[in-house]
Image 1 (cartoon, helix red, strand yellow):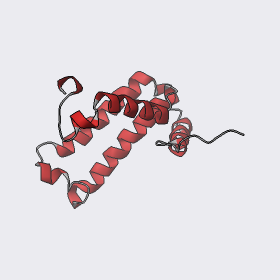
Image 2: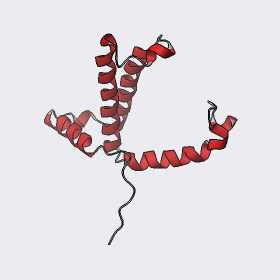
Image 3: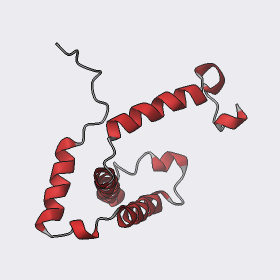
Image 4: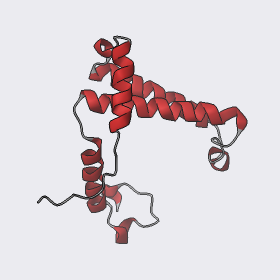
Length: 125
């Protein structure tokens, strides 16, 4: 009898399948090379950043609640997630495993006793 592992932190199974179906129906898989997807992801992140450009710290917290920016910020977040999940799928990267590993590495790089409340790079701690 196998013991169940820890609960998944990231489960994009349904999203991955929906994106794959969407691309397959349009014969777009041929354009979804890792290079193209990484470039598209960077572009979408840029569009998300543009929404926040020049906002104050306080105003940046309100973008998802204000009429003029709520839909655009949600759309750009969705685009970023879609391209990220598609890129991981095309590279056969398990996002759950990648996130677990990165959290473990970051916990070692940023020990609580040195990093708590401090915005410094690991090399500066």
